Length: 162
Image (cartoon, rainbow, N blue to C red; front, top):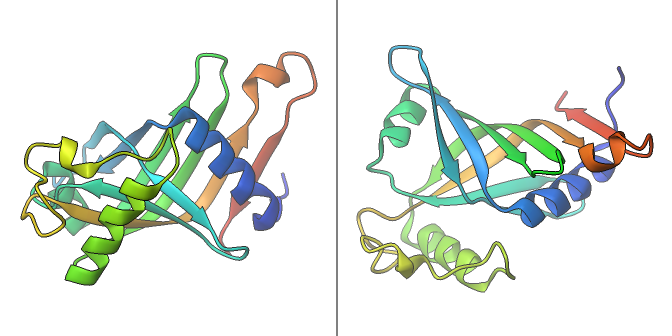
């Protein structure tokens, strides 16, 4: 199967991800075991690069996993079987400027992906010790219109970084 161009896959991925909102995120723990949780990324496409942002705690178990293996797999699923997946390299945005920008990114994002980060009790501000911004950069993307596949009109899009 040939990959599709990023400029086709990335916008389709973001549309579906932002419509579904919540992703199952998988990391590998320090013993090599898979570990999953639900996260709420915001995605951006600048016409040549797709970047995801996750507001999460740098004090979390997930942070310990990412310190050992900075990779994250994200899967979005909707009950109509629309799915999209991203395998990503993950990097913490640690500077005060990056943390403030991340806070604003979530606070100013349109519904349904936007939200006020201060709804999390430990996140009193972008400077809070428990608040962090994780930047994720996909190395592969997959988008499947499951709701239309059963009718024969759906699409499967894939992309992998070279």
